[in-house]
Image (cartoon, rainbow, N blue to C red; front, side, top):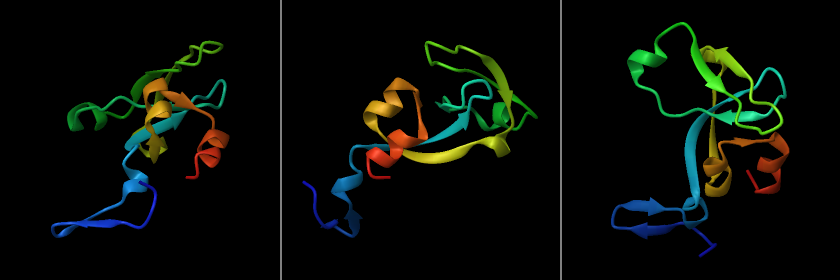
Length: 95
């Protein structure tokens, strides 16, 4: 399935991106790992600060973050489901 994008009707479908999910992430201030942020309503995200918990087993820090601190990534399904990743793991997956 790796190859050039295919036409599906009037939409171009990129098979290489089929296993990736676009999501917002923020770095944990304690351990530096990227944390996948659960989808939030616009109302909740418009607050000054939101809460997150680092899911890394060796960390577990509760922390606040602002919307401006998040970054959008296209993550492989395995990293998305794990809910955290190191930046080097994205480089290994070809992002």
